[in-house]
Length: 366
Image (tube, rainbow, N blue to C red; front, side, top):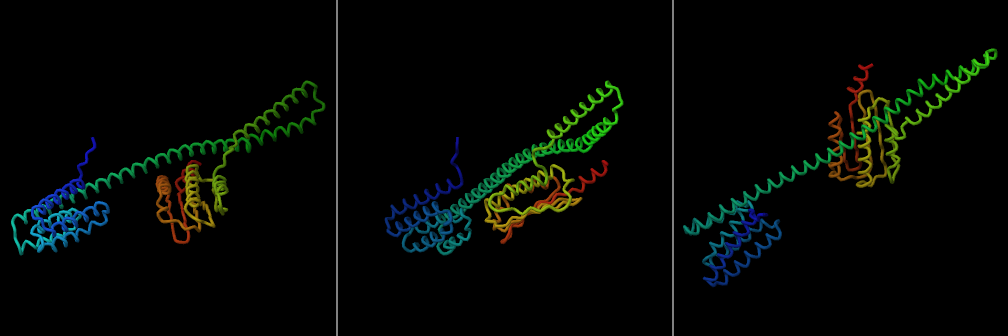
């Protein structure tokens, strides 16, 4: 069952009760000044309910009550209503209105004003505590959804890395068969064909057996070529994938440049670089009116650096989007770093991933 008990509800209920009591006092006194004071208090309370930014206008209520001290006998009691509201809104300077008691002390009036001030302070602290809890809850929910999104991205990235690793392994096997076993078999086949011309004096049975062996060797070579063709990756990998992403970018041409040897970059790093490039170009197409986009890939024995720069103006808030935030966390997970420079004349994304440990492992394994 939903509960409506909240500090704001209690505050409004107390305000209505206070104005109701003042209305009863005005009915008993039947003075026109009391009517106008009540009317002003009601109007200002309604305005503050409708427009919370006008909370500081409680000062006008205090001034209205003070100005009516000489015209309505119960005006000092009306001071409790704006004093209660001021304490609730955190305008603690309103307690200065209580200086009136130093000149015209009334025990009952003092009790009313003190209770109103304490009630306003209590409800105000309760409301701020409630807002803080709501803010904390929203932040926790935001982090939860960010972690879910990051988990989904990492799951998709893991599947892609596995796919790329399998494709790379198939490509390596196909290359090894083609460069090693394939060449040796073809060379042996050519040598046997040459030797065939030197066997004219051999018996018919020997020549027939020799020709049958050549045919089987030729058939085996064809099957090896077919197997290599089937093992070869249809999907592009590495630099070719980044170049293909740049070529598919709509609108303007992307300048793609590669420096250094990229043959030793592992698959998980290529996956990270592809994600960075795709996210950056997507942001360019959506949020920046860029005329020039430059992509630089620098590979060294110890690190790889991808820099995507465009001359479009991108809002700084775009640099803190969930996509780039997830990429930054993914880069940190593999020991890398992703930085964004959202300047006034250009937007630059730089992803740096170290390769030293990977290269050291390869060297030790050899």
